[in-house]
Length: 277
Image 1 (spheres, one colour):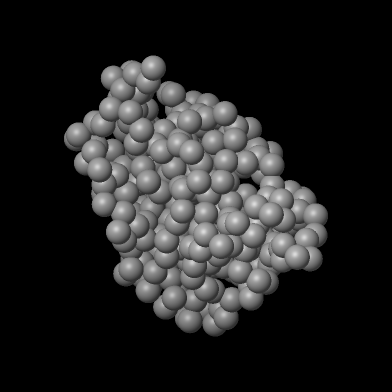
Image 2 (cartoon, rainbow, N blue to C red):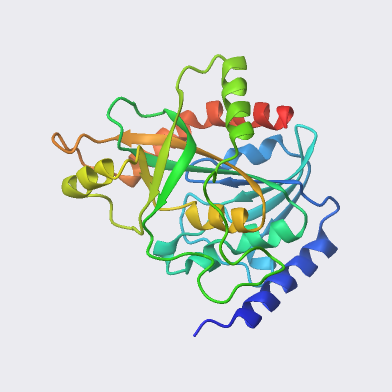
């Protein structure tokens, strides 16, 4: 049985710890995904805290995720970067996956940029395309708000009629224009449990559901942020595109390689977005 009071105590303990450790309280949170950890090099006056030092923080078990909270100034904005994330398939609940976003929202962060690497379902796209989220479908079978609600954190039934802030989406498009990026698009992201990758039949089903890209992360963090009243921008590097009628093997190494190839563009885009916030 989920103990909401214990969870609340664990969140508050992490918040108290970070208040004593951080010189700058973040206004913006950036969640970095597979192969996208290098943005931290652009942070000025960076304070780096390994996740294992923060009370009650989950531990990342994915090799391409560093597992650090990096806080400092990025493009003149007080920013917290989650260098590495947690996944439902690692054995965490959706509430545990969203734990860092909950903690940072209580430290005062009001905007979250959530990034990941995904598989393309839209066959008009190519690997390396960057998708701005305009909607999502949660197929995890779990929700970070399941169980008793903490009313001071957010409403019992949060409205998700516009989960992704339209002004932030417009900001992303303006930033892409400034950088002459012609591979930015927008679409619907669907989150599945994993860790097994999609079969051809599952790919057909996901496409028919209206999704443009599929992944195994981000939605617990996004729902947690929305519940906390944060403005959310989602960005995904489309690492591979599979036609279910001409299916090719999907290998994690290939996904990480594509994410690394697209990393300079995504990092430049994020910095330009931060400048315009």
